[in-house]
Image (tube, rainbow, N blue to C red; front, side, top):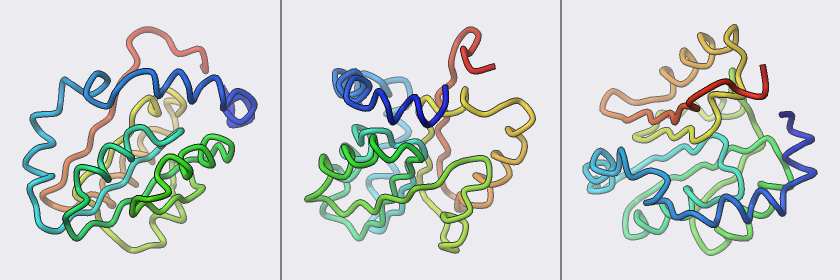
Length: 157
C-alpha cells in the first residue's frame, strides 16, 4: 500500500486505528515500557504514527516529565488527524519515512523509545537493513526499539 492509499483512506483508517486502545494493541510489551516511562527525562520517537493513537497515549503517560516526543508520518492526511488528537500535548509531527528518516537523523538526537507499529511490512526486504541501521543510530544505549511484525504475507510485496 502506498502513501496515497493512506491519504485517500485516512478517515476510515483513523477510525479503525482508534477503535483499539494502546494497551490492547501493545499488551505484549507493556511491561518493558514501564521502566522507560519512569525516567525523569524522556525522548520518544513514533515512526509511522498514523492518526496518533500511540503517540497520544505515550505523551499522556509522560506529561509530568521533561519529554521530547516526535511523531513521524509520511501520509499527510493521517498526520493532520494525529495533530488534532495530540494538539494539547507536547508532540512534534514530522513528515518523514524509513528507511533513511533524513529529517529525524538531522535532529542529531537519540531516543529512549522508538516505536514502529504496523510499519515494517511496508519496507521491502532490501530496505530493511538500512532501516535497522538508521533506527540503531537513533536509539540511545539504554533505549528500547519496538517493532510490531505482521504475521503472514504482506499485501505490499
